Length: 480
Image 1: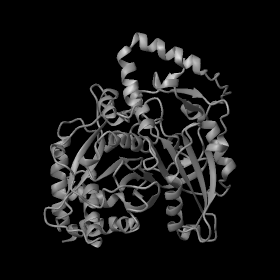
Image 2: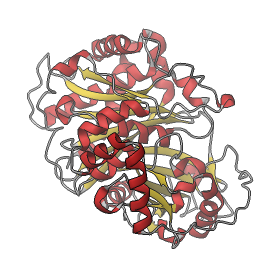
Image 3: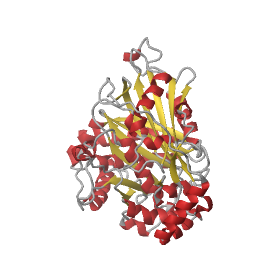
Image 4: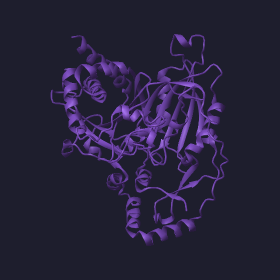
């Protein structure tokens, strides 16, 4: 019998609209090794690793009449070259050209008749620095797109996680002869659905309810049962402030990015006794303040921007260690934090954010960065996806933007011998949200990815540029 989607996973299929594609992404930039890194090499790597993520060779089949939730079935016509694609930037291969391409690629919905993922090899990036002099092909980028219905942090993880190794020498992956199982007929799907309805009649009613369009309520209810915990802060009793961050969004996207150094956050944390995540949120508040002013928005002393901040939490009996084989990716609590954009002092902004976050995390359930990094593999792509899943279950009236912050390993990772230099998350937009911000720390850097609506966020690069200025403001307080 085919594997049936969970109620939560199915909800992401029903929630998807032209303006809100439900895929999460990641942009990774690599240093091309001297022996080369091309499309054929990437395809070969994916073929070797697909056995680690069998869901990536499966597609969704809907049950006639929506008698039951859809099922995962093997795609008998699976073609890895359809999913792994190539693109190239025109000269000079600038960062603006790269971010424009990412925005356009992320705007396109995935084909629901095939396995719900895509990967793009992007060539033609300009050399980044002195070490690339004389090498016009010094860098390449890989963009991944994975539907949220696929990534639950337990049975399926993001494919961007499994292609990475801790050394330039790829790890051995057992050879596997994949033979697709026969695809069930519509009649078989109906008979299976009737059998389940007899044994679990209440679930049949829920299936009809979700398929009929009441998905938002179902996501909230079933997300908790599945382990995606939505913890409402006291601020949830009020609507989020009306800001340009909330708008009717289009089908098109823009992408912006920012690079910062992890050591700068650690310096601020050590000086003021807070967490790195507190510093991150204070930096985002400090970037939003001048950006709102540049748009002519009224920013008074009490002005705030409400952020939904998903954090990994520890369930009862969890041990955050790769040695135990446990995964924390599916346990996410979503906290509402009012970012004090009206406060002119960067230090006061930090103190206010720290106070709010301590109210949320003093329960002892939050999982620290060190514990997350100890989980086997490169967790950030999967954890960003799970965080986005949590955000999709909340009303758009409660918050202005989503901020996902996932710590990564502080050592280099490689794909087929190519060293990963940077990793920028691409967090999908919820309905009515003009921009989302994802960030990942990796190998000494903190990398921000800003995914925005093309019409509402025509100045997304301005907001991205203010991230560094905001961090500099905090660093200045250390020298005062």
